[in-house]
Amino acid sequence: MDILSNTVALSRMQFALTAIFHMLWPVLTTGMGIYLVIVEGMWLKTRNPDYYHHARFWSKLYVLNFGIGVASGIPMEFQFGTNWAPFSEALVTFLAAFWDLKLQWHLC
Image (cartoon, rainbow, N blue to C red; front, side):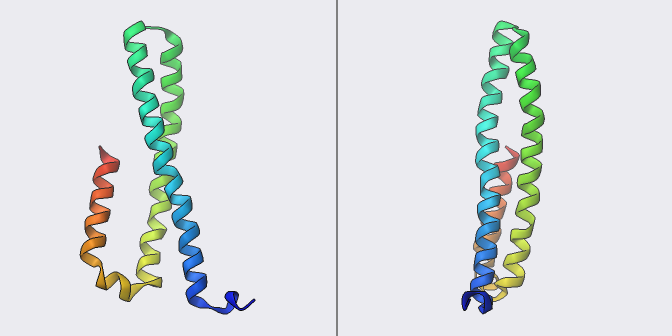
């Protein structure tokens, strides 16, 4: 019960759960993106309607997964600012570069 009264431990647990939940989505969308490229290529090569329908179905789920990944990353930025404000100030240049790189990677 001592851990439930420790604010720092609670903040760390909250951020860990948020980060774990968030990191599931980029991995899933990356894998789905590779799959979609393969299925689209197979459809263009063979003109089999099954590949076309698979590509359309999985592309809708891809968009949904991407949106969830973006939405789950927003609370992480607020947690950096509220739970670890001095830490964020000390590492602001690194974190800004990291988030910029992550954003560019998602948009590719």
